[in-house]
Length: 323
Image (cartoon, rainbow, N blue to C red):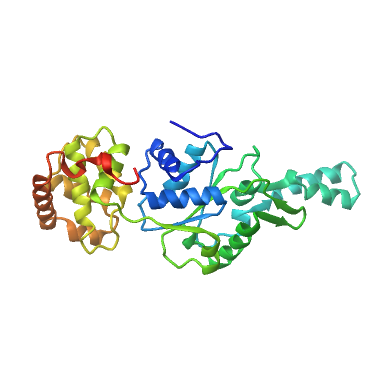
């Protein structure tokens, strides 16, 4: 698996495409350009799109490709500074106080200095990204920011402006080298304009059939070309159905692996019905597709593949843009 020297960044959009490809990530040129500019100009990269289209994977792939540590902050409602930035190790501080009392230490100022030193500081993801233990700027993945509350988003805006954090007892802690920052959002709520302006932006959409075929082929190389074509064609058809939650590329990959685990090398109506839970995550969606809808969709897939060139959906993949 090819990696870059931790201090070296890709020097062009083509180099970014090569880095992503080396990590089995298929991207179009627009996304590669956004990544290149983010790395070159030191700006956070904000990625939006539906769940399962590969936003989180961008951060993981960059960490592997750049040879840097990945620090991931998974956002959720109620996320606060203590969970995201730092907190004091209260239990160890209490033990230190008891030991000081037992040893007869009475200088309260000295005790307080000791208690609020970095020895008792618990570094959470954001502080660790600003001042990494190994001194090498990591890749900071702030995942699903839209799930966090607006006050946390306001704090994050301040952090990304100067890449510094103020700990009242210790002062201001600054990054010697800013981390590579990737922020993802599923748009369950809108990210504030002020934070958007700090970032470079890219929307990751569901891929077309040819690109999705290439992605699944890379991630599940043991699958036959026939099965890959059927899976991708079926999922592409499902995305035209009115569902509560459309299947993403991640589900296409999982479904292919599930079919192989069941010893299947082609799709049939019974197998599809029995494995819809891998693709669809809501009962209403499963009910809408299962049964007659499955057979009709498989028939459409069969006609589509029969009309395609002999190599299937992925004919002439060497000309695919951004791969």
